[in-house]
Picture 1 (cartoon, one colour):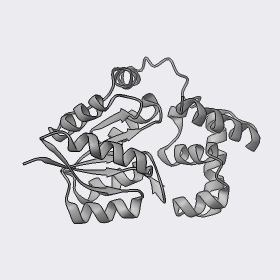
Picture 2 (spheres, rainbow, N blue to C red):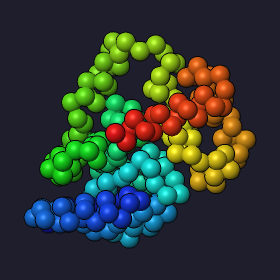
Picture 3 (tube, rainbow, N blue to C red):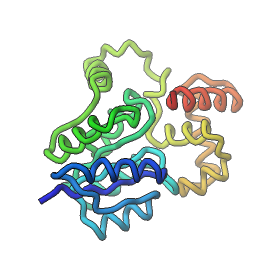
Length: 216
């Protein structure tokens, strides 16, 4: 039987492209598509996929949070995160959330198909750069000063940082993340402390640069 794949991405063009590419493989089939967290949870319950492909940035939620929720419901499912954000930033985080792999959207479709098959077989899939970054951090040779990089941010703080870079207001973040505006501001303050940023303007500029760099 073909491996059943559920695609979760908020861009229709990306979903359609992935669906066509996956559908061309004899051992793979797309069993559903979703654009946001609520739809993903519904599709997951209805289609019972073998593999889920999840983007980091989703409508109405965050991909990392979705991975955690899915794994809490069914630990046996294989999850592959496919995103345009830097591998070295998110690879370790997605593994900690319960996914088996991280593949960048900038990679060829052949890489994505290979990644799907690897996580389906219970193997970890990471690009060489991401794997080396994780290993260096594990043995304490990353060369980074604790608390001075994006790596020091929690998953929730990184989500806020990303939203700041994408131009969302505090109230918009609060609605999308289902938290209070006060909690958003608390996260912003902690981000400034960890990244040694003095003002809200410095935070905004740093977040915008990070988002733009990730899209290159």
